[in-house]
Image (cartoon, rainbow, N blue to C red; front, top):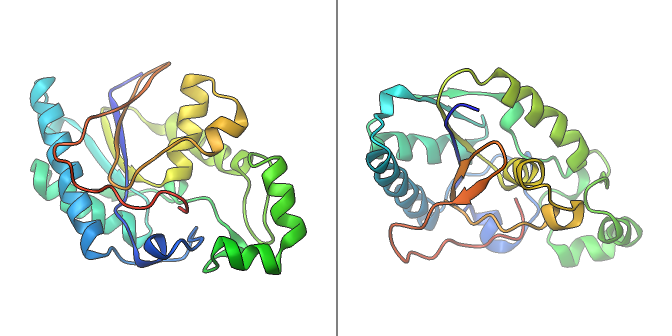
Length: 208
């Protein structure tokens, strides 16, 4: 496949509070902006290592605010002129759970929460999506890639890519660690996390 790098957006206030976020549009925190800048430095170093220029890549982001804000910072850091958005890169929708903490979900949706624990990959919350649903969107996006690409997206999308490339079991893929600002090099059968440029705290990883 063509060269592909994906990275997760920086932290939002709902990430910091441990709230299910999904499609809800939240802005980056100060830490989130630091993480976005750090991701840019990681990618800048990687492009230098592989002797590629930013203008050789297409830059694309999820249309959600946290991804667009992250991509704008990263694009400036690596010297890209701009970026497009693609709706297939949006996060897994949590429906009625969005805005709630795990503790609140445990009270309000106890039975559904138990079902999710039994099978995270196929579980679909009320008004939301399953990872299987998300996988269809990710496949559509990957099928449209026709040039080297750098994408800012969400933990769910990166977990789908990891499951497909690394042939992970569904339960392992659903909880595969994706830190805020984490940058990943995607190959035909590899997903490699690029080492951080600094020791900056990468933030919370529980909710998307």
